[in-house]
Amino acid sequence: MGSHLCDAFADGGWEVRALDRPGTHRSPVPPKATYTEAELGSPEAALVTAELAKGTSIVAHAAFPGAGLDEEALEMARASMAAALAAKATLLLVSSATCTGSQWRSGRPSPAGSRAAPSLLLKMTAMQKSICWRTRGLRLIVLRPALTYGAGQRRGLAAALTVAALAARSGRPLWVPRRGPVVHTVHAEDVARAALLVASEDPDSLDGKAFNVADDVPLPLEELARALLQAAGAEEAGRVPYSPAPARAFLWFLRRMPGWMFWGPLNRKLARAWISAWEGEPPGSPPALDPALLEQFSADRYYDTSRLRTLGFVPRYPSAVEGLLRLAVESRSHGLLPPPRGAPALPPAPEVDRAGPRAI
Image (cartoon, rainbow, N blue to C red):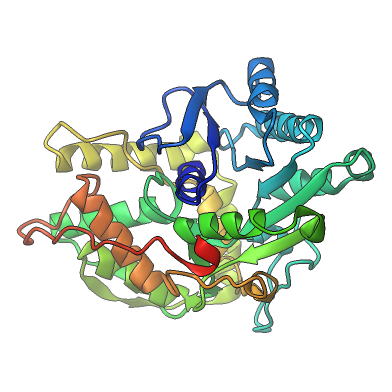
């Protein structure tokens, strides 16, 4: 997410100062941007954040050190808050739409200000809004993206896309669930455009507000899985029955399985297939599947984006069907996704007009 934010703000004419973990930044640093590394959650990172924030208008926080590093994540959030407060800047927190909970079977969208479900991201958001910081003068704007995917991602839907691409390469068809829960997604570029949009508004008028960010067309899990297969060039073996109650119980069990028992062996197998697909010379570390993705598929999730749309926001990728296809084409054109065995080379990714609503 961070690299997309940097690109969007740099393209919008902002001076960008970026902070990331050592060794994790892969994309080119855009013009008008400076790049610094520090171990997130450390005292050093807090000092670097405060120094970089001097003279800025916006401190955008989109950092999460990784699964199981809750304390480091909270420390980095506190550092961002303190840096924004000291610089008299607005804190733009990129959180998650899962903080708003979900509307099971009702089909009603979850509004941006709806009651949140317990999670680490909720704790971070609630902490930003706490009286302790608000009474000190901290200005806060929260973005809550739906299930996010995009170039540079190594987990989530990008990892699922890699699994489908490896299956296509080996000639193995994959099964898809019969309908399943409705899932709202959003491309990372659209999240970055939303961030630039709210940052361009009067910060006092948006202070304390949260904005859901999602595409136009939430898809049943069946259609989302089919979009993944289509983007990867994989064949569909058929549909398997999906029952909500047993599926939720099974997903709950999988999310809580120890890493050494299930997720570790699964990702080692994925890594071996990844290395084999590149004949022992992969372009980078293999994507990884993690239990956080399963939370998105436990129930129907609709998100109300009307608050953001009143500012003029229109998603560039209205559904995951074209968004995932675009991601696959981009990834293959950069040598980051193996093509199906025997498939013709895909054409280069088409240019996308970066000019959008409100001169983004």
